[in-house]
Length: 253
Image 1 (spheres, one colour):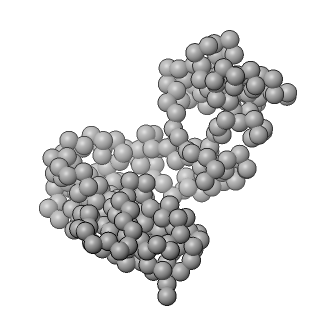
Image 2 (spheres, helix red, strand yellow):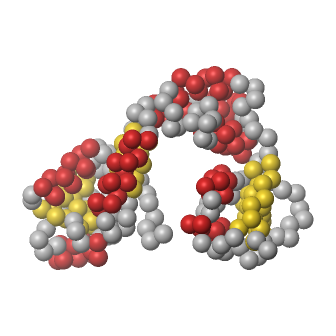
Image 3 (tube, helix red, strand yellow):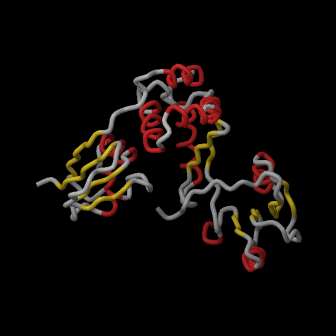
């Protein structure tokens, strides 16, 4: 991973946009769509800048010296950040980027995803936000609450985000006495150090595990596919295991 994806809140904040033409206008629309307001480079309160200039080097250098993060159209070598292709299901945003390698590729991946995600996905997010108090009351333990949500939002689960109408199913799910899944330990046999060769099932379990038990020769690239907050326990491990889903990684003989 060459860039850290972040969502930057700019509503009500100044953002510099320099340049003329279609590229500059597109950046102005993007800023305004996110609630920011466009200013020129004399505004000392701006922290972000978009440049659509024929010769941007001097302007980019001057703004960078002030601590402003700069995006330069068609010049990834001058960019402090890149702008992804955004799939908008407000408040759910899916951003597809290529670290400046190919904006066209990112766009077409986003267009494919547009066909997969229901139009009411944002309403499901809002319904879950509104139900936070109910969720905490039903599952006071944060780990148990996360496991219940993981099970509900999984492929085929009652709140499967790829199935339209999830908003209407939130109340029934919260009322279901069998909604919280039991903890379990799953052993996975790893045959390669290349994370791209993980099976879909292996990648899914790594991404949802509460704890990872791993042998010393498991590659760091494989461990990186686990959740960042998953507990990592090198083998041999003799103490008690955390509650929830534990994935045990073994090398193929």
